[in-house]
Image 1 (cartoon, rainbow, N blue to C red):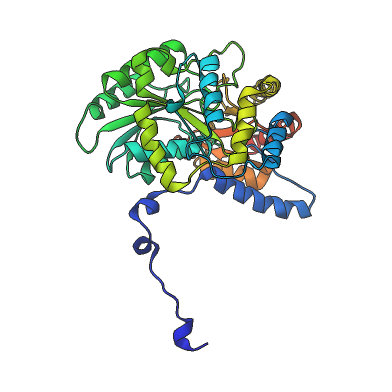
Image 2 (cartoon, rainbow, N blue to C red; image 1 turned 45 degrees about the horizontal axis):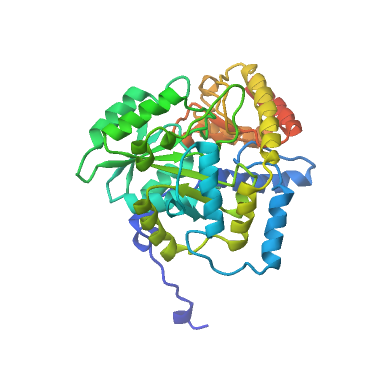
Length: 415
Ligand SMILES: Cc1ncc(COP(=O)(O)O)c(C=O)c1O
């Protein structure tokens, strides 16, 4: 090859890529999984392995009736494009689901199906945010919210939380007043609510939701209610859909859900939302032009998930509850760790800052050391907006949790 042919076209990343994408961070949970995978491969040669408390994904298999529906869809050649926002049968099942489970009445024009709750959220950021608009996000938050806002050139405005791991209402009031009802560039248009919550497992009461609803309505702010963990509630916990409280809240709320967590279908990529028709119309444009329909076979499987036998949910819920009780007891017994008992989802969010030292200065150091020395993967709280915590996912078998907690306990004792 001549010298001129071997030359490559180079440009710095900053010059090459959009300012928007350069501001976006890698997903810390996916990065952690990658790191854990690499270490796991090495450890395997020595007969050792990693206990994974990192990723938020059910360890259960997708129920058989749902897999059968997908097989039938394939056999019936349901393999073509569909409407970009989903098949009518799935939308009808979603309308019924919202009525049955959430006491909210919708028509199919109010429904959109996307590639997981994640895409539905991204559609929303794209249709609402102008550069510089604020999106109000309570801390600690699921990692993708803030990054999706940045990807749409918005600015995340974080709300503090209190010792009970729930939103500081006074702080929300202040921020909503500052940025809401505004026509200028910095206007806040959206507030993101997530109950049961990732990463804390906290569930908001009716009174708390009513207060949040009132603040958002008074300040002209739409609510995105991310309810993907709705079925995993423990003890006496009760949950409510904020859109069911009044007509006004229904029209100002976009309720998001997915089959991903409820039916152990994370890889099938089916999420959905219900909202005002105008909102759905705008979101449809995004999906028309960016992805077209979510996988047709997965859509038919989702119809079965929502309409078929629901027994698998209670089996999973009970098992998560056992694990929650066990892991909470174990963490509470570790000197230096403090944790609130979660009411839902499959995460626990212990405070670890009492264990910080000159060697371990923050949650990232803690997670790195825990992975390398004890071979346990957890996600640093810093990734969710608070460095004093770590997130432990208990979507893994009780045996693994037992072994993992033995390792965590030993690691903390030796710090
Ligand atoms: C709070 C929350 N919302 C949305 C999602 C994304 O769900 P999906 O897999 O349906 O895109 C997750 C996944 O971890 C989540 O924790």
